[in-house]
Length: 238
Image 1 (spheres, rainbow, N blue to C red):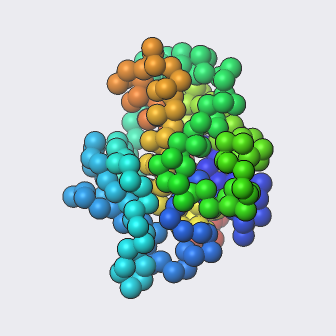
Image 2: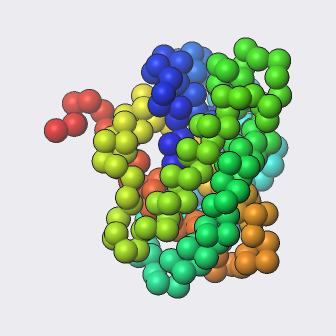
Image 3: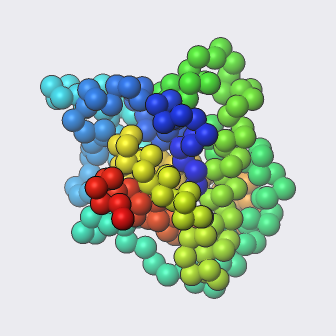
């Protein structure tokens, strides 16, 4: 899940899931986003709305007008994830085998869903912000989107046998450092998760079930947790 465009210089890096403002405007916010209409940090199956809040407390409009379903739970400052089972592995492998031949189309659809949930996310990509071409026709978006989608799916397929997320450690460290630098928070991962699950659901509707949703959601949570583990200030790096 290469959520950031790591081929872009850090000063111009794009986050497809941190939305509502441009990267340079992060300094104007005391909090990147605030959960509204929820009783605790993460709740199972609760709809939430996110909004930007300036230092003076004024809102900057909803990040998303579409309710997002939060399915993971944070406990004691960390993401709680479960062991990946053989049954979950079978569901993920079966659906990925069906999807992989269309990974280019699905990767692009995945990112377009993120933009559908949060239209202002397009402004975080310089090649989209400065272009009059619709995102789906922009030649620079699809390669990045496919990389993200394929890495996420391949990681899910290998999760149980490997016993851990199989993304290279150097990539995880780079992602963690970049996400930390740009203030990525848990809600950003949830937006991406929501878009991913919707993309897979539409790709394999005849296979889709609550069990398959849980399997893909769990695989994504473990990948997200691996990235979060590397979100350390420079002073904490060994």
